Image (cartoon, rainbow over all chains, first blue to last red; front, side):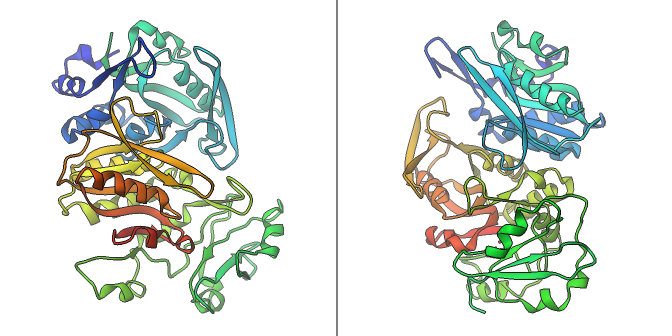
Length: 182
Length: 274
């Protein structure tokens, strides 16, 4: 489901602040740059508000944010809904004992890690990132949380690239986005 | 005791008095073997202050949580929020040490986990991820910064990748400022300006998007921790190069023995825990 379709009055303002940078990180990719959204206090606040309105009162105790742009959107949501924030990181960044989940990239593999003990069994979790493309990273995040017994209630992203069909790669978990980019 | 003396304080169980060890010149023999022991529930703190007597005289006044077999900072009095270079109160530096600390500081400090030998042997890593699991302490951390900066006409909060991305945006949102990420090379997609800075071995580069900030804006720089001050200095230079006035640097944690505060020169530094 996309809020874009729901025509919330704030959505156009948010979409207008996202900058598209052609040929980054490589030729042919149209990169969706959210840093310009962060320069607009009203639209940045609207972005957070739309997620908070959706998730407060849903008994979510964990917001997991994916390094690094998930660290920008996750904590404000977590603070507003009274949940803890759990960073999901690239290998060797987290200092304590971790569990790791490997996932496939277009060429090669990568790995996502979470601290042991950060999340307890039966907690209700939200996974946050700035954008969903193929869904590989989000899928790894879902797996990490489910491996420790948490229930992933939903994945939340500012932007979706629907043509890359990431929504189908989420183990049946729902996805909520504010903006679609074709 | 001289300044720069470090104290380690262990409590093997709630019934036993504190065992006090001290170190000089970075050598800590007895501590290392205890840290490697898996059958002790350890609580320790490292403190470079000269006030030993409150700790030794009144161990029974401190009750430590023993429900986790991990190492946390002890928030024993006095742990202060420290400010330097506050131009509106030039006489206040000496009195900052004896001022009563905000009651929220203790909870923040004790939520920070210390991990020995990460990323390499001898380093005691200050892990803020446990603070983020404590909803009250995380909320208090942000509130303390917001209360300080909300009426200072700050239009830019710059956060240093990646842990500055966790603390910067909530502060920016609360004070109505924009958030500008300062990143490692090749992460930002648009045109950037770069600033090189020195590491212990070698160099690194920090980047900021061209056009993110305007000349004359007032900025705050946020990171989780200041150690040598190299990263913060690079961030200050990046912003000043485009004509921004850096009002202050704000960190949750300071490692005072690494003298990062001096490396910032005239720029004030505000920390919650040191």
